[in-house]
Length: 276
Image (tube, rainbow, N blue to C red):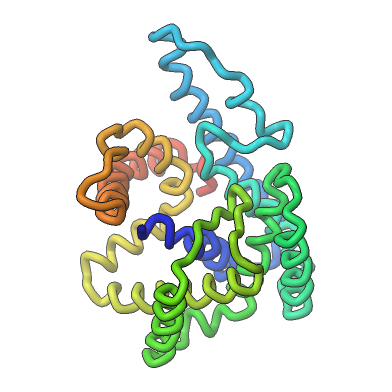
C-alpha cells in the first residue's frame, strides 16, 4: 500500500527539508525554538490523555506518559520524536554540514544500520536522519533551483522500476527499522524525495494547491506535532475504505482539514510556545 511504500522516504524528506533551511548560527536560539514547542506539545498531549482518567475512571499510565525520559519510545504522541532528533542534529550539524561530514555520517550510519543497536533516546534514528539533513543543506541550490524535468522523469523511472522489480519493505526511521542495506535505503530515499520535489513544482502551478502547500509549509511544526492526536480520536478513519491507499489518502485530507482551525488558534494564542 502507499502507506507502507511511503515509509522509505517520508521521514528522510523531513530531515532533508530541515537541512535546506538550516544556517549554522544562533545554535542556542534554534535549539530553544525546538525544545519549547516539544515541551508545549507534550504537555498538551498529557492534558488530552487526562480526560478519560478524570471523567471515565481510566487508570493513568505513568510509563506511557514519561517512559521516554528513561530512553523508551514516546507512546502518546509518537511524532514528537522528530523534534528530539532535530535538536540533536542542529547541535551536531555545526561541525558536520560539509562534504567531509556527509562522508563521515554515511560511514557511521551504515555501521549503525548493520549493528542494529537499541534506539535509546532516538539516537540511532538521529544518525539515520543526519546524512539527509547534511545532503539537504550542502546541495540546497540543486534541490531548490535546478528545474530539469528529464532528471525528475529519470528519477521516477528508476524508483518505479525498482519497486516493480522488488516492492520496498516497510521501513521506520522512528522505530529504527531499516529492512534494506543503508546504501539501498539512502539511494531510494533520495531519488524518491527528488521525485516528490518535482511533483510539488508541478502542483504549485495550480493556485489552490500552491496556497495549500504554503499553508502546510509555514505551519509544518504544528501539523507534525498534532496530527497524530487528531487522527487517533477519529475512529472512522481507522477502518479500511475500498483499499489501504484510498483510506490513507482520505485520512490525510480529513486530518489536514481539521488542522486548519488548530493552526489558527495556536498561531494566535500560543505563538511563543510553538517557536514563532
